[in-house]
Image 1 (cartoon, rainbow, N blue to C red):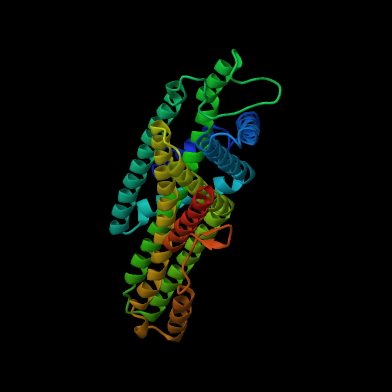
Image 2: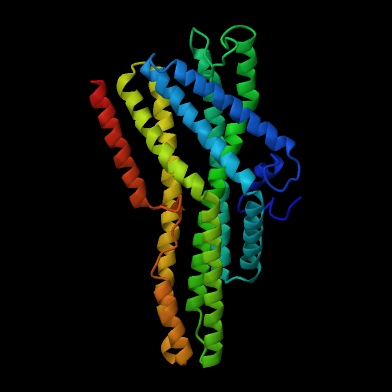
Length: 374
């Protein structure tokens, strides 16, 4: 068992990746099977969307939404497998940092750490409950129709998937393999990202406390304590850089796919009259807005907290320090004027302004589609 697998901060999210063999594993069989399940589902959805494109607009839009969801899961699977060693080093770093704050940190920060741990555990549990409800709804949804349907509509070239025994076989596969694979890839990845952003914000708060605790009358001692804070800030910057390296590609596709997903789902709501479909689309719209909204909210908090470091530096008794101390303060304040922002694809800052822009663009494309349809 790895040292970071049972870290209370992440609860079961990292453990899921370990048990799936995505990280901390030399075996390739599990990774191959999970990848094969996603690829088979992706190919079947591509064929289905291409064959049903000119049919009912509501069903076509829902099929397109499911295709985008599986595409996003494939992207996340590829990222985790390709960067498995980087994920392991990142989790190990968080584990060591967590232990240092817990054992040696300021009592105020230890209390904040415990509070954030409770918050992240609650977030993880809520995700489990939401996933369970969503899975139950997905299982029951195709059974509510008179005709045969699947949770994820797929088609293949050499046989009719709606005929016995293929229908029963693929329905069972979607229940036992496809849906759990999507859930254990999509949700833990999101939770790990959110928890890492929250921990980064905590580390910046810890840095601010250390800076404001510099009160020594001795110039050399004051300078040494300030240099330790500079080193600590560099460690936080490295943490944010490592996190951005791990999630940057996913952030870009999440941003692009979310805009398409939201536009399509809003369009479905405007054209369908089936109550079951309307309820399902409404749930999907709410879920997607929540997922990207909360991600950008915590990324925005991280950037905002990084700007507070400059104020904490100014609050130090730098005016009692020597010349080197004052030069270091000026340099450090200048460095902290630029916020520590996560960027989607290295291009778009993950903050609330970008989130609002995504909503505006999605609604604009929805209005365009609605106008063309009318």
